[in-house]
Each structure stands twice: as C-alpha cells, then as structure tokens.
Length: 106
Image 1 (cartoon, helix red, strand yellow):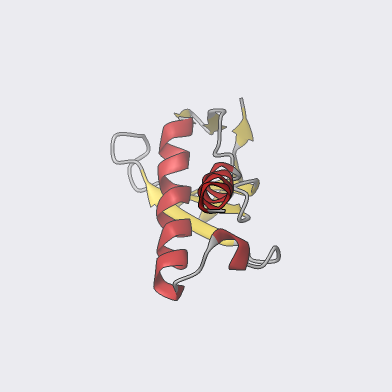
Image 2: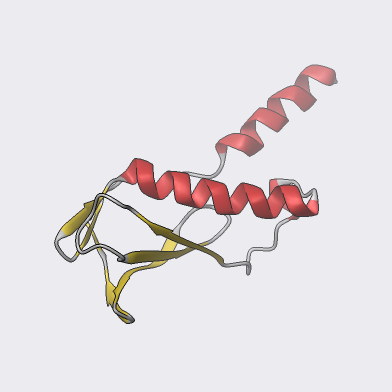
C-alpha cells in the first residue's frame, strides 16, 4: 500500500509540462528556461501560500506571471504570460511604454 502511494505522488508531480519552446517577443527571444522559471515561481507561490496539492487547484484558475529580463532591449520591457495549472500558456505578451504586443511561439 505504501509503495502505491509513493508512486502516485510521483506521478502527480510529473503531470505539469513546462514550456518546451522559446518565444519571439518583438526583437527578443525569450528562452523556455526563463518562461519555466517565471511560471514555476508563480504556481508554487500560489500552492504554498494556500497549502494546496496540485489536484486541489481548480481547472479554472489562470495564473499570471509578470517579469523583466534586464539584459534585453529595449530596457523596461515587461513580459506577461497567462497559464493554467498544467502550465499551458494561453497568452504571452511583451509590454513596452504601456503598449502590449503578442509574443509568438518559435
């Protein structure tokens, strides 16, 4: 019985698939590892603040991650992505001077 419980717990953590593609945002390429880090930070902060398991999170929850990448141009560009609990990105935009523009998956 304990072995089954351990295996099922591992399977739950393996369910979310993080971004595996880079994205083009204007003149910048945002790499998958940067996107993954932003999503991971937001998702786990939400889970930890509420002491929830992955299965406790509603399918309707949309997470929003906002971040900047200092070495990218133009300076001050903010990136905003929306994703669900399975880490599927529904919207990814870059915002410069208050003007949001869509990013596209490479």
